[in-house]
Length: 209
Image (cartoon, rainbow, N blue to C red; front, side, top):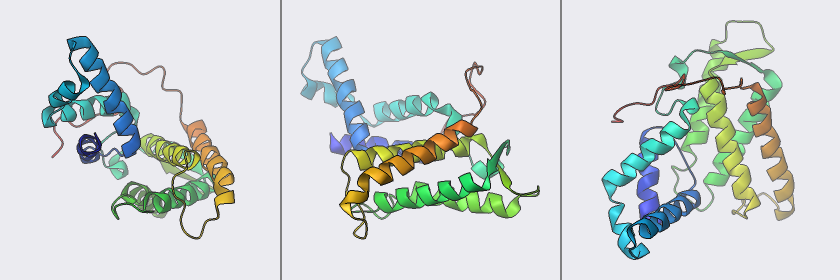
């Protein structure tokens, strides 16, 4: 299942989404069990139906379910509609640095890339900000992407992921709370999306390259 989850993760990465492997494994386990029950076959047989095309379709479904993040879109080209206070900007950068550090512990060196990409984007937006501080205008999908990434990191900390060598174990509960608070601060900036209908405000690419 881990190989299949990795393949699904690669498909998601192609359209700008990153999901922890353990969550993908749990998702696939549920999907396999559902297929097995529906078709009255064993789960081992059901796994054979999860080929590359099926995983690509599943990746698209996941992308559409979080379309507010504008999967695959270049954040720097989207409307900068949300005024982000400087304290929140600083806290978000700090949280994303923690996310990148935790993703890089005992993992592939490319794992921290999503967090680092968001940090870079925030830096560019700050540099290009034309208004008066203390706020920097940012695209809404940047906030939703960052909030999800930070929330996922808080969940990993809660479930006992390895901490960087220079972080003591007794810091874990404080780190988890700080990350959750940072994510909540971002969520508070995002307008209510319940009024959106149809395909939503943000488009998902039809065919990722």
